[in-house]
Length: 355
Image (cartoon, rainbow, N blue to C red; front, side):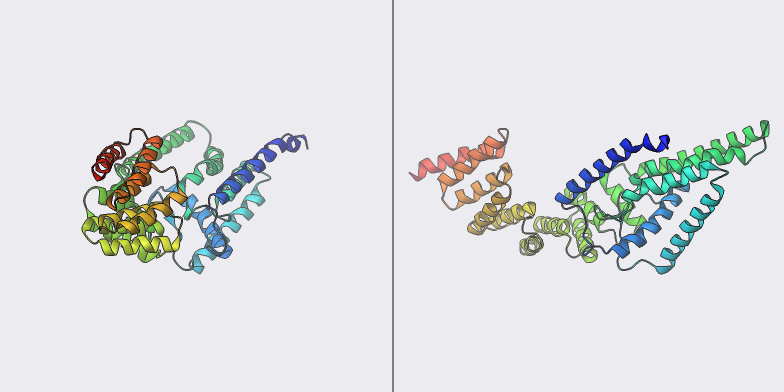
């Protein structure tokens, strides 16, 4: 009883931390509703993930930065297989746990610590994440650490076998680590590996598109953003990224269409609003650009880039006083904003000439 009572403060602190985390994540829009992802899918994925984490602990392969939820329903055989396997192991541990308490401790450690992040309360879009297993699999290593020494006869032979086995395992995992590190040499390599290791990974498609665009591979950026939208048609970042690549490729009308689609899905997407305004301005549609910039400023009034953009558009239509106001506001927010300073100087000279 005393051992239980002494741990009550830790349970209280854990509960308080979990509550605060949930409130913060929900206020930030990270918590998925059952309309977005049904509880049945979450529960099925939770059972499968418990098994997948063990598999990746035993053989850490196909490790990626994002594991997407499978499109459609999960295979029934996988769900039933995971449930049967988890129940069988749990029953075996409970049966043997009285004699070998490390089995009970290790297995309950694994199940319990992984439970808050197994996806029943879904935060983000991932089906699972390797980082969630770092603490939970300590329980499985507890089982291994106690089970292996008792599985061999005593004496020098046991020590030799354990030492040799440990050396082989560490050597193999060292080689695997070397291969895994190669995928992290740059963003393109990282997300290409994710695409090769998973199916329908719309996040990876969208993420690889941006470094490709920055490197000048506009066709590749367009292709991957379109693939992301094929998988997830309402993916805001892909609409925005595709529009930027299309505009740089020389297709402004198509770019404006995708900026507009992103804003239809989420009118509060400030980045897409600012990009749409910029695209309209580059087409000479300055009145429309000013309108979009004003809507963006309603959402983000302290954005120096937006103030500079609307200043340029206002200057083009001869509204120099308002343009100067926005350039000065941009410099108040960011005194080192050289573009805004240059635009302010130029507009002041234009204003003097106009008078």
